[in-house]
Structure formats: C-alpha cells, structure tokens
Amino acid sequence: MRWTRMWLVTVVALFALTPAALANTYRVTGTGDDIGATCFADVCPTLRAAVEAAASPGGPHTISLPAGTYQLTQRQLLLNSNVTIAGAGARTTAIRGNPEAFARTAIDAGADLVLGSGPHVLRAMEFYKKRLIAYSLGDFAGYHNFGIDGVLGISAILRVKLDATGKFLAGRIVPVRLVGAGQPVIDSSGAGTSVISELSREDIGAHAPHISPSGVISEP
Image (tube, rainbow, N blue to C red; front, side, top):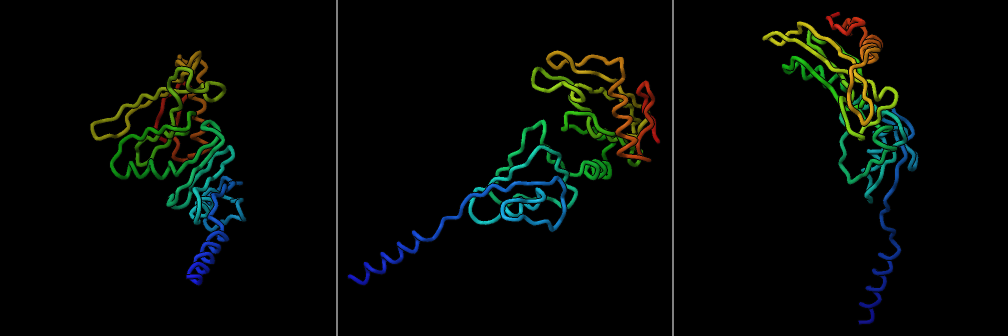
C-alpha cells in the first residue's frame, strides 16, 4: 500500500513538472511568399512560414501581420491548425492569392467576362483570349461604411457589349467619384479612367486594353 502511494506521488509529480504546450504569437516581418522560408523563434519572414510554424503542438496560436499586402504567389496555402491571423485592419492589411491566374482559369473554363472586386480601389484590365478581365472596379456606393479619401473615392462604372458567343464587341469606362456618405456621382475629371488606363499599361503590358481619354475600351 505504501509503495502504491509512492508510485502515485511520483507520477503526479512528473505530470506537474511537465510544462503545458503554450500558445504562441508569430510575428511576420515580410510580405513575400518564398517557399522554404522558416521562422526564427517567433519571428517569421513570410506568412507562409508563420502558418507552417503555427501547425506546431499547443495553441491556439496567433499570427500577427503588420500593415501591407501579402501576395500568395506560390502553391496553395492551407490552414490545418487552430490559428488566428490578426492584421492591422481591413483597410491596411490584405492577403491576396493570384488574381491573374484565377481570372484566366475562369476564362479557360468558359467565362466570357470576368469582373473582380475586393481591394476597394480600381485595378488594371486585361484581354485574355479576346475576353475582358476587370480586376477591380472599386467601391460603387456606400453609406458611411467605406473610406472615400484619395484613391478610395475614385471609382468607375463599366459598360460592356458582347455578342451571342461571348465575344467582346465594345466597352466603356464611366468615371465616378464617391462623395458625402459614399454616394457615387459622375466625375468629369475622368480620374477613374486615367487610373485604370495607367495601371493596365504598367501591370499588364501587351495584353492591356487600349483606353481612350473618354473611356472607350478596345482590344490591344
């Protein structure tokens, strides 16, 4: 009986001395997506490295993202553990996949027109296999729920005409600006047209549409 008690005390003592797995916070320092990058302690060079580190025992772990755009250019990023990703705010922290690959895959699968959304600002346009892709048309309207300062207030309406087979026939950008509580008004300055045209030339290159100062869209 005395030996049994001694064994029980020993086992309880061993459990008491074994530290519980702790929840960690992994801090991401870069916006890249390098395969093979690893964390040093709780500091991680990429979001992908932090996710892999957060799959360790214990938790639930947290991944802290400073303001920035985290572009996932490599393979799919899977979350297989209980982890919280905490950014600096919806307006300043964004995690993006590969919108170009996604849009082109949609057209390869039969889409005739791809309209993107999400980043709250205007993005480039592209022609792929004679089909138009608009990567983002910004915010069209709101009511005290969207920021409208600077580029956030520059938006556009896209008019597109397709034939019965889905082929692009004509298109036009109507520039608008968000004012007041977030309502859209026609923007005579043409800022939205200029933004889309410039981004298309810079980001897309040879596959960018020709966009006239009046907003008329034509194939490259």
